[in-house]
Length: 124
Image (cartoon, rainbow, N blue to C red):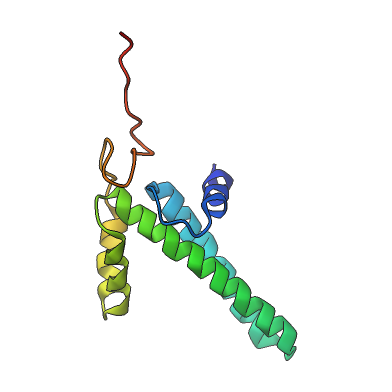
């Protein structure tokens, strides 16, 4: 189950279109944080410039995917992706956490159909 959400993040890549469920966002956030911390520890343990550069690229890539997933998560809650700019304001991360913890809006919104509550079609 966890690997499905992580695979979804990598499959969508840096796309900010659409919506992301809470599980997709939070599971990726845990994996991204663990991966970034591991990379930072490895960078501190070695003196190899090439490895440091490669790990910096990996951290940047994981963080970029995380930002795109946050924007899709904001879309799921009915908010604009521009709300991600709250991360630049002191304590703004708390606002983003609160928004990311909220349940997604049922039904379609201007960013697409709900990934959690699929539209029910009635056969005629």
